[in-house]
Each structure stands twice: as C-alpha cells, then as structure tokens.
Image (cartoon, rainbow, N blue to C red; front, side, top):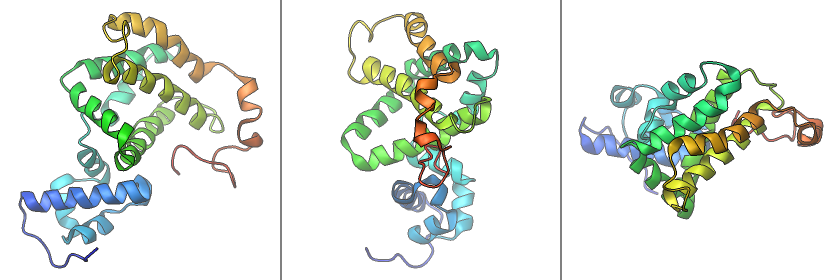
Length: 220
C-alpha cells in the first residue's frame, strides 16, 4: 500500500480518510492497541485534526463503526438499580434500542458481520470494549469470573437480536417486548449472579483471566 504523504485540508474527504484509516487500525490491531497518532499518520493528517473532528479515540471508534448507540450512556443506566433486576433491565434496554429508529443500523451491522470478517472484527471490538468492559465496570463481579460471565450474557442478548431482527424467527420476531424480557432475562441474571461452580472450577484451568496463558475477553 502506498504511504500517504502531506496533510489534507479540513473537508469531508479528510473525515472519510480518517474513518477509513481508523477502521483498518481497529480491525487489525484492536481498540486498545490503536492510537490517534498512528491513525492520523495512515490518513495523512495531523493528529490534532483527528481530535478536532472526533474528539477522543472512543468517539472516533463509534464513528468508524457507525454505531447507532453510545454504550457509554446506556450501559450505566441499564445497570443502575437493584442488582437482582440487572438482567431484566439489560434485555429491555437492548430490545428498546433495536425497536427504535436506530435499530435498522444495528441490524445492518449484524448482517454485515455475519458475512464479512472485517466487519466481524470491528463488531467484536465494539462488543468487548464498549459493552462488556462497561458492564464489568458497572457490576461488582469476581475479576476471575467477570470476562466469562459477561461473554455469556452477550450470547443471550446477541442470540435474541439475531433471532428477532436478522433471521426474524417466528413467533419470536413478532412477540411482545415484555414476553421476551420475561423469557430471557432470567438466563442473563443467572450468568451474572449464579455461583456455577461446575463452570468456574475448571475455567482457564483455575487461572484468572489475564494470567499467563489465559485469554482475557476484556481485551487487556
């Protein structure tokens, strides 16, 4: 690939070039290992211009993903309240977002990720860094269990979304929102709170996530 040189004027082409470079960086290196400086260098602009257009790296990531929501606002709201109702609030929040006008963009994102590895990498980074990591920060979870617990929660919510909005499996696709909350929230709550000794006694061979040789789904 030919290295871009020089700085671009502030226009829509510049913003598009920054977003293109950001998508490459986030897909290839992940959110944590990508830097504003490196993205700016790939786009051929000054890092200050990236900050001017997008502010923080997190906001740049959301723009690169064309994210229909800001998890930084929604996740803390959903997890604020009685702990025993956290699963219910999470499922209801997800359904509310996907039933809103923003839902069409989310459906397009999921469909693309199912057939495009590049988009799948970006979506995985979005789920891990913007949703699961925030959930861990908002809930009091055992650090050794938190990544697996939140990953299991993600399977329930992502499966519900794919079944209802992407594949449109009936009667799930047309079911009342509260029916799905009542059906799926208990599973989410179980993954958050139940001891599950049969799972965690052998999880990572007894090693906490982040230990040598143990994967860390939180991406750290």
